[in-house]
Length: 220
Length: 220
DNA sequence: GCCTTATATTTGTTATAACAAATACAAAGA
DNA sequence: TCTTTGTATTTGTTATAACAAATATAAGGC
Image 1 (cartoon, rainbow over the protein chains, first blue to last red):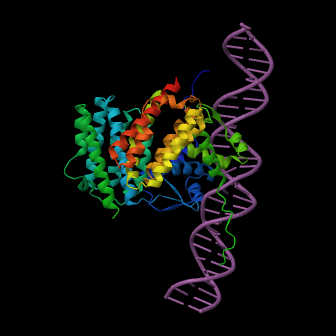
Image 2: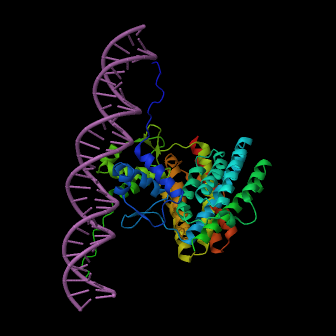
Image 3: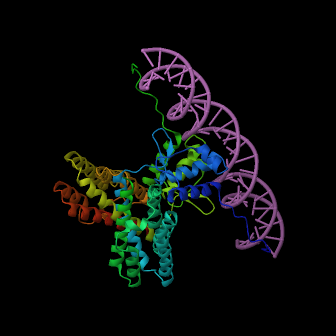
C-alpha cells in the first residue's frame, strides 16, 4: 500500500482528447466555415481509428459546433447573418446572468486576473495578433463566468462561443479598431470593483453588442 | 425519369432512431434520475451493436441529457435543487424571447392548435394522466416556439426540457392542483390574440415559474 | 455478523473489416 | 465548350473482437 508512484498514468480516453483538440480548432478559427471533414481523415490526423473520432464528432454536432448535412456529410457550420444575431441575442441573455451570479463570489484575485487578461488582450490587439486577442478575450469572459459556479450556464455559454469561432479566422488585424471608443471591459472591471450589478450587466451586454457588430461586419 | 416508385426506402441511420427513442424515454420520464445505462444493454434493447448506441449516447451527453461519470459510467443525470432553479432561470430567459419572435409569425391556425393542446392538457390533468399532460404541455409550448423560426433558440430550449424530464416521472396525478389559481396558458393565448408582447412574456415566465415550483416540490 | 480480499463479470474503449450511399472524376456525346 | 454518363474513390454506417478498467460477487478471516 506504499504509494511511491504518483504519476498514475491516468490516461484520458482518446475520444476526449480528439474532442478537445477539435473544439480548440473551432474556437480559434483554425477551421473555416463550410469546410468538410471526414472521419477517416480526422482519425488519421489524430493517429487513431474512426470510433473515438465518431464520439467526438457527435458530441460537437450536438452542441452545434459541427454540422451533419442531410447526406451525413460532416462540415463546419455556416452561419447566416440572422443566425449570428440570434446567437448574440442568446449571449446577451445568458452572459449577464452568469456575470451577476459571479458577482456574489467575486474576489480581488479574480478581478486582478481579469485585468491581466485584459492587458494581454489590448496588447495583442495593438500588435494585430488575432489569435492572442481571441484567447485572452475568451479567458477574460470565462474567468468571470467561472465565478458563478453554475454548471448549467457555463457549458451553455461555452457551446455558444464555439459556434462563431470559425468566423473569427478572417478577423481584421486591428481588432481594437472595431471596439469603438468605449472600453466595455474596463467598465465591467469597474462595475466588479464597485459590486454594481446594473453597471456590470450593461457592460457585458455592450461588449457582446461590440462582438456582434464585429462579426456581422466581418461576414460581408 | 418516370418516377413510379415513391417510397424510396429512405432509411434513417440506426443511431438516429436510437437517439430519438432514448430522448423520448428521457422526456417522458420513463428513465429514473441516477439510473445506470450500459452500451451493451442498450444495443441489445435496440437490436443493434454498440457503435450506433455510442453515437446516440454521446449526442445526448453533450446536451446534458445523459451523464458520463468520472469512471465513464453512463447514467441519467441527477439534478440538485439549485440546478433545477438554474435550468428554470435559463428557460425564463430563452422562452419568452422565442415567444416574442414567434409573435411576428403567429397565425390564427397556430393559436387554435395551441388551444387544442391546452384543452387536451387540462383534460389529462383532470384525469390524472401525467403522461398525456406532459406530452400536451410540450406540444403547447413548442408549437408556439416553432413559429419563431429560430433554429438557434428552439434546439437550445429543447435541450433544456430533456434535462428535467426524468424528474417528471413521479409527478402527482393531480398535476392541475399545482398550477395555482391562475391559468397562465390562457393568459398566453389571450396575449397572442391581442398581439400583446408584454403580456405574453409575463404569461410564459409565470408558467415557467409554476413548472419550477412543481418540480422543486416534487423533488422533496 | 462484519470487514477484507480474491475472483468473476460487466463495463467502456478502440481498431478493424465489410457494406452501401454519396461524391469526384474522366471520358464520351451533343 | 458544355452537358451527360459511367466508373472509381471516398464517405458514413454498422457489427465484431480484443483489451483494460471498474464493478459485483463470493470466499475467507476477524
